[in-house]
Image (cartoon, rainbow, N blue to C red; front, side, top):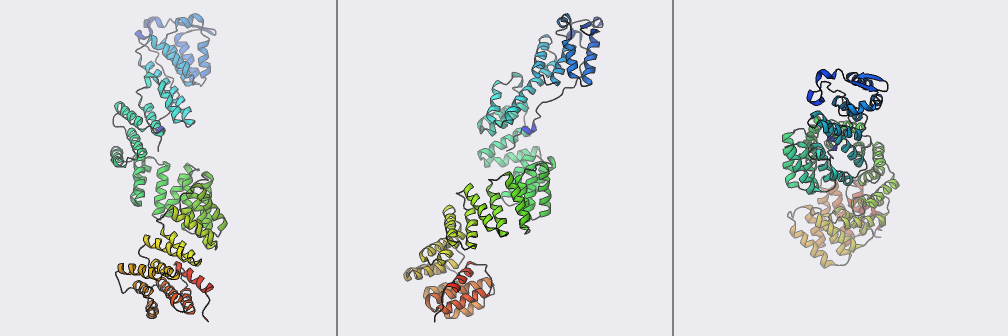
Length: 556
């Protein structure tokens, strides 16, 4: 959330040294004609009041503020007493104290003058400015420490003059949001509206409160209210861009980010959002341009490095991608997504051990999230570390029971282990989550047969067949044969006529599996060999066929 403090200039200000020498008769308390006769006695000489003021001003203009203030220290005791409340002389001193950051002394000097000139508007403005600067400096110290609570505590002793200052109360509202005190923040927004009605800054804070409270119902209306007042408002357009991105409306999101950048060209959130949308829209050059601009502004923006890595990976530049994500990890070593991507790039570079370490780090960071288990299981699987792969796949389905691919992988590995019960259960669960893949009911039926439970094999396959619409499809005919244990003699010719290479190879596998169950092992191996001849390992049955050819002996 934007702190909104960036909208406030903390007063460090130098005050322009201009003061009117032509005070009114009422202010000076002396007739104008007598003032030319006024003299100032000091250790370094005797001057007229006007000469003294001119001398001090000239020293200040040359940058010698210390020397200018020293002139006041050299005034004789009688002169100090005589001119103690002189507006011209001592307003100038107050300004010098303010410029040299002696703010408490400046405050005392102005307060002293206000006793004599309580209606002087310039003194009132100085008094307010000094008090505000003192408060803002204290506030800045607490904010540097990162303590919202300590910063808020300063408001308990807020000077009466500052209690209705808009900018100070705007910071308070933002701090209350940061501290999670949303009801108090709402009340402060009401107070701000009473000071300055309709401020976009206040609307932004109300929006932040809605975001923190999860008030999606009113959020969009607030965004539109902000946009109506300020069409190029950066926070509102960024929020609308993020909402569009979530809905995968990348073109719309891009336009919102461009509007935000039209008002705030260096806004980091808008630059990243635009770079991200260009990436999703496959405008890689434009994405890189915006992300690199972001890095010029903030070289430690890890997300920019991360997405530059994604772009490189998408273009098969794995080493470049790895270098980028490693830069992101230097900034955020415990970022789950960066470690996940790092492992992916390492895997494609053949650095399996490094990839395993990256994904293990992810699991250490978020042991209850399934995705790193999927990736690590895959790399174990590739290296034939099948027991470890099986363990990770089981963890996947424990953490994400709807991830049907993990059930599929468990089924495949348990078939390899000839653990028919576990394999059948896995394919049964996969079928529940993906009704369109005929492989699952075929393999569940197969496992029931291998367990010697012919009754359940026929019951299960019959239940599936009754729900299949097209009885002329190859899927239906194949499962029908598994159910009937007969009629597969005509299947090879029908399978040979399938135009899709992967579908044809899959069905050859299931003919082989039929022979494996009901016929000849050598005939089964012939069909497994046909699967491998098509050289199309885009489906899990290809792997089962490889194992079958290597492991199952042919009939004599």
